[in-house]
Length: 282
Ligand SMILES: [Zn+2]
Ligand SMILES: [Zn+2]
Image 1 (cartoon, helix red, strand yellow):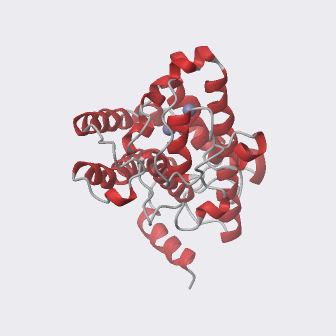
Image 2 (image 1 turned 30 degrees about the vertical axis):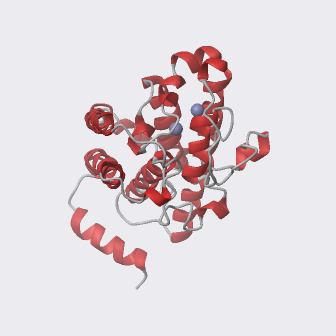
């Protein structure tokens, strides 16, 4: 019996009498909130108790712990408000053919997951570049996210509402919602399965917290082999926060293609780090 069929039999056993879209809506709300808390809590504790200093990218800097907890509580409350748009999202789940019964084949799951990564990276890179290319957009929208030159995990969610929608929310949810209608079809196993969607939400939050945490830890996705797939992780995004004009992507593919990769210290581990660029110079 394969791993997927074991997951499927447990899933069907516990959900067979539940409405598909109630599962999609309430499950997504609860899961998303739990994912947010469980992905950030380890980093909050690491910064609170100053653990793993040897892996900190800029060990000479201290996180403002009071502000860190305030931002965490603020963002947790904001995340809980996702219940409101989700409550009205039922027609969208129906339109895109979301599945919540039998799992698709392993090949379909893998191809859809690859599509999510490629589409999300494309959208994130270009919206992000636009936010830097326009002085108005940078000053009024993106500079809020860039207030941290040496970020910590929760700082990934500190952003203007326009950026939260166009640079974080849409690149995360559009690929799964368009998978069926654009590529695999809405019927049969074409629409995204809600379990794959939840796995994707978890993996996206894991990457976002990792990218902003300010550490390069041995169990990070980048250190577990994903850097060989072009994933920049905290080293690349940490440099983006301090050097501003480089490393716009989640992965490094678009940066390589468009010549926006930071020219030195790609791994972010050597010291001293380059002095941060002042936004006012832009
Ligand atoms: Zn960032
Ligand atoms: Zn930026």
